[in-house]
Image (cartoon, rainbow, N blue to C red; front, side, top):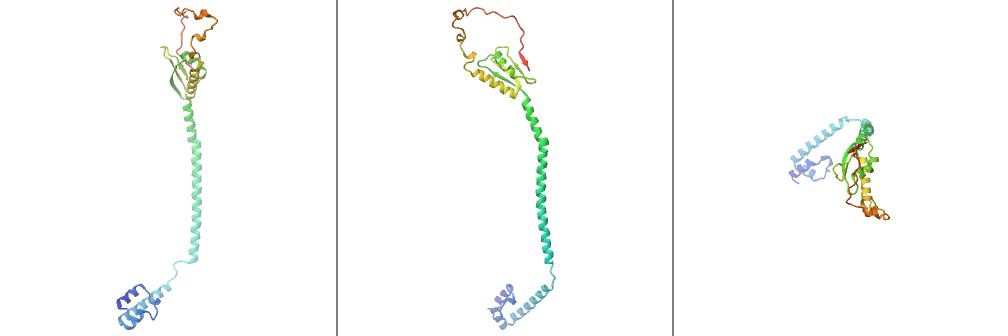
Length: 221
């Protein structure tokens, strides 16, 4: 082993860990320069060890253990506080929702249900007057009305709540889709076959006019 190898070994190892018969010690016995370096290094290691042994511990082990227990207790309390805060926040949100948001939604739904809408419903079988007679009992809310056209249009205009409009549409659909409705039955089948004079009536005869009577185009309920 040469001097370079000895210095490299001493830079990463301690003289305390080297045996007396090691290659480094054997080289130092033959090389005065390396022996002087090892002597200085051994003295410095001794001084450093003496200095470290004379230092008082920076913290008492008992104090460290007590501090660890206090820190652990604080962490547990912190978790409990976070859970309690979350529960309180949930309760606050629930109370606020039950007192403000839910009533507001209920009021909005009530307004939507009671709000009036206007819709014109076309008729394929019933006449407007027949449709009016059918829906009259169901259009009763405040401000509701239906309008019978005066120009012969086969339709009826209804102003009512959404619930009433749905009921009116269903009623008119049921009546118009019924194959037994009067508007679907041929005119001749409505006459009594035992009275042939009715079948032989003069179709070109002028109808008898009823006296003039004021009619109301709309009914409001």
